[in-house]
Length: 176
Image (cartoon, rainbow, N blue to C red; front, side):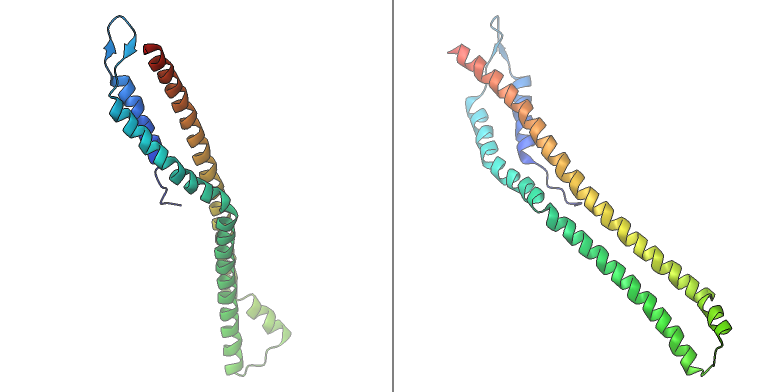
């Protein structure tokens, strides 16, 4: 999600707004003079870009479940790796016990189970599992937030631009 694609349509709409703000007005009329070809060129670019950028946002929205599923898969892999690591540590301890042929009494087993190595291994495994769960939740939240923000921003920017364009069209029609 770090590579957020910039919406070029919004840049083009900003360009129209700048053009409208910086254009000379016809004295005593309140009307403005625009370079028709520049405005038509920008509008053509917007028309070409809207489907492309809309498809990008639509793709993100449509595939949010897949994105979340992928994040959950990654979290599951991290959890499985932590569990495997914990099992490897425990297996290593068991192998060492067998290798030394030590007969442990029930009391010795309790001491070994509470040994510092196992406590550290269990803490580390719990830490890895908790971090994986946290990362999965963060990725899920981030994906939803990004999609929501992009859709709201697009809608708000387009609504604002439509108001400006409608006003300019009305003014141009009055100039006829």
